[in-house]
Length: 161
Image 1 (cartoon, rainbow, N blue to C red):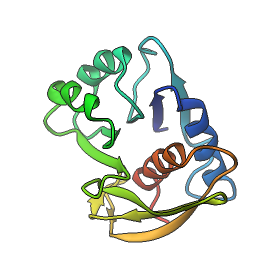
Image 2: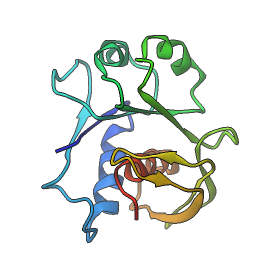
Image 3: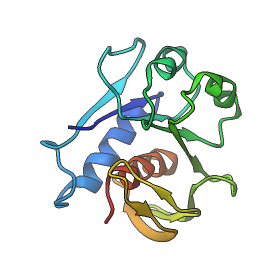
Image 4: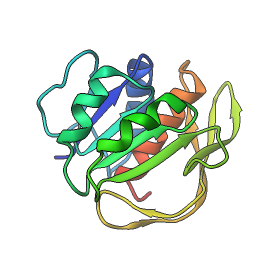
């Protein structure tokens, strides 16, 4: 069972957005994924996909414990986070998200109902299958657009559909 950890003040919102995306989907549901919000200390649980909404002291604890082929998904709009990435294992996969046009996963439009998510560059997901550039809608339920975008990035890493 893959585990997804979310670091940052928006972690609770991002968790809610992720759960909303997973409802009704066969490839991802609560029984198949361990999802948790990491607040102030390393959970000492294996993390396959780590979403970092912002630079945080706990992030510098978790990154060195990541294994090869784990995913680190970071907010490309938070420049303070990049100095923490020096300790990421060589084969770990770094995926960026944000409004920055150089991010791997961006928002092409934002409405009060959700975010139009755009995968800018292809990459291979946790299952080893390729994620090709495309757009899809990610619903919002009151969460801010950056939380929805971070949840969508984790969703894409875990799911092909």
